[in-house]
Image 1 (cartoon, rainbow, N blue to C red):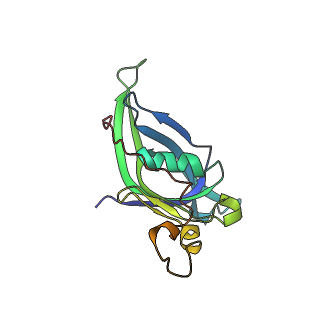
Image 2: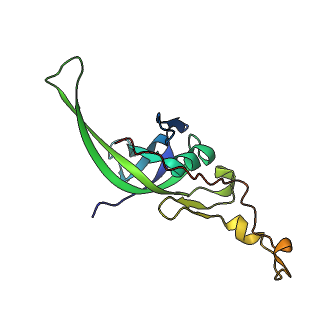
Amino acid sequence: MNKVFLMGRLTSDPELRQTPNGVSSCRIRVAVNRNYADKNTGERQADFINCTAWRQTAEFINRYFRKGSMIMVEGTLRTGSYQDKTHPEITHYTTEVYVDNVEFTGSKSESGTNGGSYQSQGNSYQTPSAQQTAPQQPAQNNENMSYGNINDFEEILSDGDVPF
């Protein structure tokens, strides 16, 4: 089973890109503290882990996360390699996390949101604020029904081609 869970802070603002076919992607780097401190300095060390998100997950990260934001990433570990262009005899190896789901883990004031998460597999949005703003009494008809504040999200219908 290949499953990765990371919790840490973004080292820079996410940058949204698109493939020639219009598929959104976003690369982020998450700084994850280690469980122990350095014996000599007492400082905690961190690992800096590259992550790649695609489609709606990439757009969600780009919209709601900034440098320094706490984030929880769920995904799978991917490895790869490529030949150096200037020295063909040298092979470079890569390791990154392909993001399936992300969640806010910081405080409300830190993230600037009311909390929530995005799960790419089920295409479901979970926002506590939407549940809290729902009417307390049942509506008489569909015209009076309130579904909460979902204006912050948009559904993207195009899947496009996977670039790999």
